[in-house]
Image (cartoon, rainbow, N blue to C red):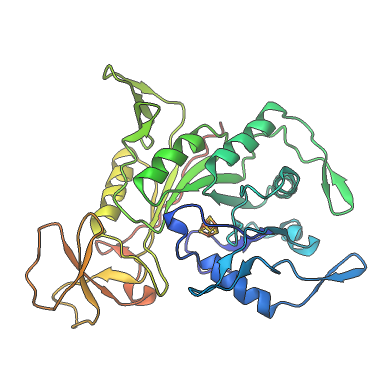
Length: 349
Ligand code: SF4
């Protein structure tokens, strides 16, 4: 089980990572990996007992544990776990790392894809910040469809990679700011996938998915148009199938302005793209009708924050008063509504 609202279970066949962009600053997996290293016992691999696979993924620092950049593949009982599960399940793949991390050899990713190919009863959600590696890896499989023998444990299997892209694998990228959206979404749209999604969490600024900067042109990733310099727009074969938005949780969480979330909801609604509002996170907008709160701030639309008192006048029209109420109290309603839409279609290209 998992408390991630948009999935049912996490599956971590490969663990370990390193910081890649501002969304990683308060990486939950980094802290959790350090905890697991202390808690877990040695693992049996064949006839030998070896240090468990969370060993040496992190090292201590003054600010808490940090990734070492090391990555480890899990033992077979974890790698093969989805094969044993009959009940159709939505799996989030690699919540404790990034499947397309630069240190992970292609052979390990092959094994993960082989398991996913052998489990048509499940849906696998793969989310990465390494969109370029994902595009290149999938292009390699795209160029060589057909039976590919992949070694898993002691056995070879031939996953049905001629059924490509795998209909039960959703591919997604994280996009916490416009910069990451501009960089990663064109890669995602260039990658063959049954479903393509974006996780804008932790959302750190306003992001316009209708106006991505791409090779000197404007890409509308929700409607599926590319606009060149002459002003004409060319329809694209692919667009996003799902967008998730969430604020940050944890002790050092950065707040999310409600207008950033509303704007993405409105972009999705106008284009008919399913929208999932996952959480406010640690901070939530405060209304004067709420009980008095501590730790009040004014949050501006550019992310600037300043301390506030309950009766302070609003510094500017776009500012909102927020308070640090904790993830649970903050909840996941946006404008008093639950937004838990899921992808409706499989583009299959
Ligand atoms: S890519 Fe994900 S797992 Fe890796 S450091 Fe960033 S937030 Fe953490």
